Amino acid sequence: MTERTETSPQRTDVPAPLDAVVVGAGFAGIYSLYRLRKDGLSVRVFEAAEGVGGVWYWNRYPGARCDVESVDYSFSFDDDLQQEWNWREKYATQPEILEYMEHVVERFDLARDITLNTRVTDILFDEDSLLWTVTTDTGEAVRARFVVLGLGPLSNSNIPNIPGIGDFAGPLLHTGQWPHEPVDFTGQRVGVIGTGSSGIQSIPEIAKQARQLTVFQRSPNFSVPAGNRDLTDDDRAEQKAGYAERRRLSFLSGGGSPHQPHPHGALEVSDDERRAVYEEWWQKGGVLFSKAFPDQFTSVEANDTAREFWVQKVRAKIDDPAIAEQLIPTDHPIGTKRICTDSGYFETYNRENVELVNLRKAPIERIDATGVVTADGRHHDLDALVLATGYDAMTGSVKKINIVGRGGRTLNDEWAAGARTYLGLGLEGFPNLFNLTGPGSPSVLANMVLHSELHVDWVADAIAELQARGASVMEPTNAAVEGWVEECRTRAESSLMSMADSWYVGANIAGRPRVFMPFLGGLGAYGEIIGKVAADGYPGFEFTAS
Image 1 (cartoon, rainbow, N blue to C red):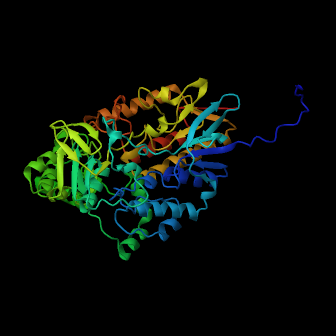
Image 2: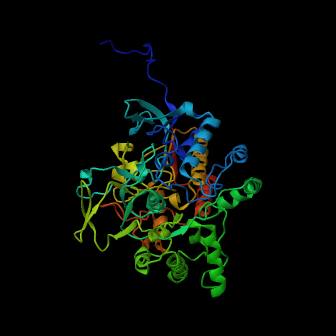
Image 3: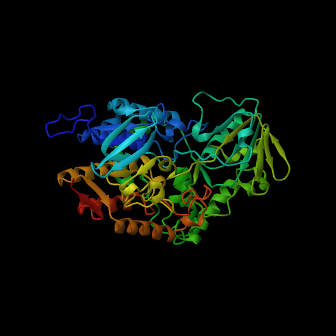
């Protein structure tokens, strides 16, 4: 072998490193590509699905729609885009949201830098070159200075470990992995396991088709009617004329919508005024009901007034008082699990072809080829079974990738006792790697589209700062991470949110450490915090030259 000398030619078959690799082509990934490319960076996006859309590519189950108003659940970065797009309904359906996302990709010529049908398997940091190597299931490996994880907090379906689940002979469908072709339940006996958001949305639609629908309820949930309707030309004209102020208020709010809670607490007003306020927010629809008064998440007594109003409304919808009793949650304050948004969910139990099976009274013992066996000895004969069992939320999709940082540290090991971040963005020991809209940020407690924009703009500005300093990498200090973990913990414990066994704390996944994962304080407060960090020169981050 000839020893290499200073005059030996350099290899030319190794591609130059990219500036950034983005993992995921949902809202966060799409905007990451747009913004970073606009800043002059070379960017590549990898997406496991056959198309863009993230969770909205997969969630095609009957009745799937967003629980944030369509006018708000959309990008704000381009006013021409806001003015030209016409939303059809108050709450957009999955097909309309996907159509919108595909339109954005086409309008800004993003597809040429998105590689579909490609799952990232490994992300490895090289301490000599200070570059990341991103490897995919197709065998491709690319190097990049920065990695942006736009995986989404609700993108890893949770398949329950029920004995015999693989023995079922009929169609076994998960709401988070729904077939692209239409599913016809006409004349069939259908079972649905789970009454979270996807179950509550799909059950009324499936009941319209099925000969018999059996709902296996693990735990009842609070849900508020969407009050959905078609938008008129006048509605759209008014929305577009007021977009600037609507967006300003949304970015300052707790949840990323322009609606402001009542200025006084629920117990500071008269009974008549309190009921009028609740009625107003009931009419707004869905999850917004949890934002009527500012103390609904800090005072049990205030929360109880919201719960009592809700119970009265729901009892009036259900013919059988015994069924109503089983559909009313008693184990958590209202809103501490995300309030679902429905279209006729509770009324569905008035149908003759719908049966409710309370799994708290008779748990599922096993599934066999022809149905579900419960602990009371009943065999529920089924032709099709739907799993509306949610997601391994917040960290599930990150865990599926082998991410290795400094000193061979894996992110899975670092997060074994709970996710640890600084600002929900930076990870100690993982330089130039940013996680979007996940643990340590408002995440699913806020409008994910505006949240994505907030995060991506912060990351893009941080990269520009790094380059201006002539540095190669930035990463948070241990002290900064410890401080942020404590900040998130303190905020959660000062609220009612930790009282619920929700997927916010990973309670739906066996063996998951119980940690409240989102930042609880609202999108507006969070935006102020990360904005101040940037304005103050990024305290808590170390910048290192090559």
